[in-house]
Length: 88
Image (cartoon, rainbow, N blue to C red; front, side, top):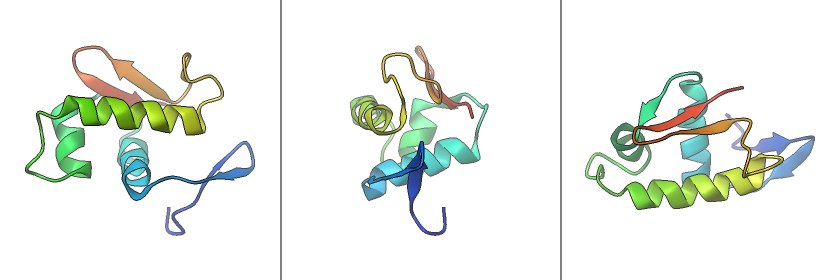
């Protein structure tokens, strides 16, 4: 995390600063279900909370970059109607 680098299956993956911050927040809370509002406020700022579409878009981009099969995620799980969960 200190180097702001992410490796997937041995290859460095380029993430935007927002994607990186989102992934770090999810990883620091691995195993916990995080509500949309909490994620938005932590990653985008306290003035955010209702912009769930931002989160959906970024989660989709992140899945494309780190999941072997983005349609069957191994790490980034959706908790329908609640938020997301990271599982290592």
